Length: 405
Image 1 (cartoon, rainbow, N blue to C red):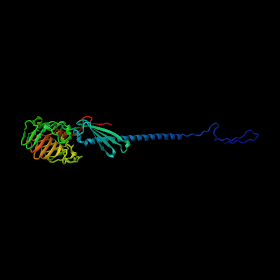
Image 2 (cartoon, one colour):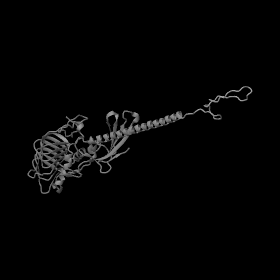
Image 3 (cartoon, rainbow, N blue to C red):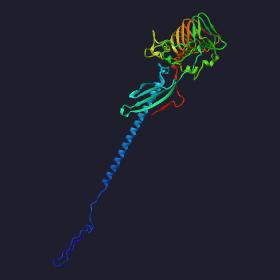
Image 4 (cartoon, helix red, strand yellow):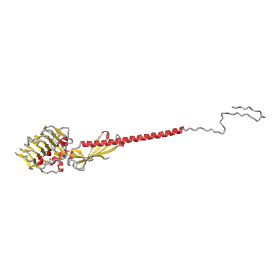
């Protein structure tokens, strides 16, 4: 600071104090304005938008994944129902109506899966041999508002052998009939078999044999319908090839496989169920009477014997495949078809057959011998029911499976 000396009143000069730190005259002093608050607000808004977008995106991803999971589960349930129904196929549907399904008829069953998911299966008969199986699967993962539904389907056919026996007995060897035996080629329907009304049959020969072989009769035996020498009876393919099926395929599809030996089968079950756990339940051919097991009426098994089979008592229905002789020594009833690699030998007791018996006579040292009390009755209904009732399912050749939605 510079201090000028003061003068007296007569001196016009005065002293003025001057501050060196004072701002120059003419410059305005203004308040400073910051931008930190604005930037902070902008950053907060941007972060809020990004966070909200991330949450929404995560929620969409979660919902999409959850929906895909429910849809996949519904598809798996539908496949379960489809495979379960086909694996546990009710072969009673294969039979002609009224016991089996009519063409166009629809049968449905519910297959319940864990945790409330269900598969409803619909079976529709398209033709005599083909069925359309649809399975609708529903899954919800415990939440009814998140239910998904998928449908799969498959077209299947019944693969059963094409066999048209030319007689009650068809053989490549000699035949001897004696005693009180009766062999008839008159078409005979089993008693009270309701499906026979849908099966058209015709009479045939009592015995068809290979040319060069003989048929001998004796005692009080009767042959109704005559005998016939047919080259097909002497052809080994007649006994091992059956249209689309063969001996080997039937053996592979056998419901029961047994070694050679003596057996006395009988139906096991109730009026509504059939116990298939054992090896001596060969179906129920009777339709009423003492000991009748209604639950086994539609069970037509394929039974395979790896050696000579001796039947001492009992009854059954279906297809008997015997890799040896078929022998009966007691009271036995069979409804359906018998195919033996060797011979048919009827001993003591009573043997009743509705259907047809085919003997390849591979062991030429023996002959078919039918003695005692026995009845061999040609029955188109019994043979056709056995073929259809024992048939297995196969897929159609092209586009058998599809997912409908």
